[in-house]
Structures are given as structure tokens and as C-alpha cells.
Image (cartoon, rainbow, N blue to C red):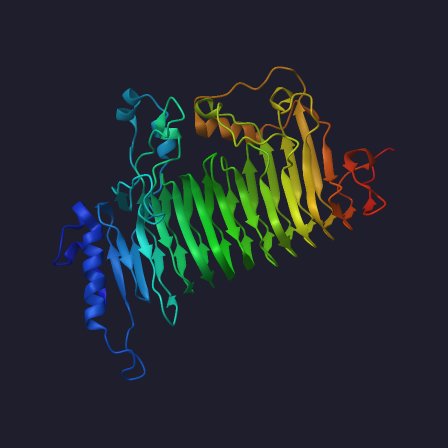
Length: 451
């Protein structure tokens, strides 16, 4: 027996989903609200519904507005493929590509936000509801949201497709909510992949979010949420993961790749955990704690910072120099324990020239505990810089797997600024690699073999 609460966008009687799936989904939501009016009938009342998007390409010209709980929008494939690689190939080579565009259950965001519009104006999916209880249990699962193109941002960049700017957002959640889930999504070529305000018990799990200006932004405030098992990487102007005024955030088992300004950026975040992730970046500032970040634990992660190997992106970076630190910590009583940190960079690329790169930088605050971190800093044995490649995939694999012809690079393993006191630094750098005022901090050096 078919359910009244299951909708297929290709079988709905209003609109054409291939021309404007936004109009279709909004009509379906209106039907759900029309049918589900009683909030307490037989110990039930408003169960919500499932909206199914079969595999195919669907233009979205009308923003989807969601203001009901228990709604699940699901597809049959996240459909991700690299648009950045395609746009950086000569167009005469496109005809030889097996695929040109993302696929699966794919929504093509054809909105045209203008400068000065509200932040939410360019969102494909806009979720907001006032009153009590908070909107709850809205789920996005297993489909692709594609921003299609980036645009000229006035910077004079030769290829506008590398600006990471188009004013578009995949999913924008503007009000406090409870128990939302994003699972198995493919999100590509949007200035903001996912922007969420006031999250509680949020789960962002097993998604592919990449080639977006920003991937995940948790804004306003929030608690008790998790970002787990995702593959993602933002552009050089934005965040892969950003959170502010959050408590109890769990970031675990993610594989975060370049080229985001930062892999994780916390602002005034407390009592949260970053563990068992693999982070890769071409720039300093991979992990940033800004403001009053307190009692957070960073443990058992692998950090790799190396040089950009792909020719079309060599001219771009996040604007930070190597004195900033790979990990830059402000706040109190944070723990950075048992991480592996690799810095493999060309001496010619160090900024400012001749500087000694900083790995862990404790900027301000007190009581931070830095212990048992293994820092490996190397450069190439010759002055000849590894040649960049026109092939993104092969260039990055070669860079990741090349371990021969490397020699030690002189670095500052831990720098503790005078504004930060009562810190404990243990076994995270030798005597000569740690800069610290021992009158107001505790320090134990990592033993040097043979010395």
C-alpha cells in the first residue's frame, strides 16, 4: 500500500522538476502542511514526509523553503565529480572526458543572488521556523547540490572559475533546530556549502563537500553536535570547518584536504573534541583557535602541510606566513596531545624568506597542555623545487607519496608568546625547537637520539 507521506518529485502534479525542482518541492511541502493540521491525534498528528529525487538533473530556480519538522529529502546518488579539474582543462579537451558534470540525483542551483541581498538569498534550501518547539529532524540524504559556476569577483583572476565566489549556498538553516541530519550528500561549487545557525544535536556524516568557498559553517551558537566521516576541502578563501560559540562539538574521522584557509577554525568554542582526523593543507593555519577557546581536546590527528603541486593553483594561498603556525591556539586549558604533524615544504616557499617556520603557536590564554606530539619537518635535499604538474590527481598523489630525497628542516616546534602563561609543554620539541618563558610555563624537552 502506497503512503500519502511519500512523494516522488517526478510524479507530483504541480510544476516540472527538471525545469524548477524548487517550485515542485515547495508545492509538496504546502500539501503536507495542508493535510497534517492536527498536532495531537491518536498520540500522533504531524509525521512529516519523505520527498524522493530520482537520479537525474533538476534545475532549481525557486528557493526551497522548509518550515516543517520530520521532513526527509533524499536521492539516489551524491553524484560528486571535480568541476575544478574540468574548468582548469582547455575546453577542447572536454569532448574526451567520460563525464563533464556531476551526476546522481543532481540539483543545479540557478539562483542569481545580487550584492547586498540577505545572506540566505542564494540558498537552494532555506530552513527556518520560529516558535516552540524548535523545528526538528529535517534530513538531507544522498543527492548532489551543484552551484555550477563561480564568477568574476573583481580581483583580476585570469580564470573566474577559481574565485570560489557566486553568492550561492547549498543548505542554509537560519533558526534554532534539533536533531538535523546531513548524510551522503555531494555538495560542489557553492560559495557556502552548508551554513547552520543555532544547531543542537546536529549530525553531518559521510558527505562529500568540496570545491566550495566554505564547506561547513556552524554559526551563532550551538551544542552537542558532530561532524564525522566526511570528505571535504574548501577553497583558499574559506573554511573547511568553522564553528563559533559552540560547546560539545565532536569532529572525528574526517579526511580534510586542501585548499581551505583552515581545516578547522574555532571561535569561542569550548569543551569540544577534534580526534582521529586526517588534515592536509598547502598553507599555515590548518587549525585555528580564535578568541576564548577553552577546554578543547585535539588528539590523535594527522596534520600534513606541504606545497601546492597543481600548476593552475600555484598563484593562490590564504595570505598567512610561516610564522603563524600550522596550529595556532588562543584560549585556556586546551589539550593538544599525541598528534602527528608533518611539514614538508620547499625552502624557497617559506614566508618571510629565511624565517624558521612555526608548527604549534600558543598565542594567548593560559593552562594549555601540549604533550607527546610528533613533529616531522623536512625539505628537499637539493635546491631544485619539485616541478608542478598540470594533472591535479597525479600531482597530489606524487607529492603525498614521495618520501626520499628529504632532509631535516629547521623549525620552531612550539612557540609560546608572552601573553600566554601557565602552559605545560611536554615532549613536543627539543631544547632548541621550543621558545618559551620557563619562569611562567612548564617545559620538558623531547630527547634527541645520540645526544
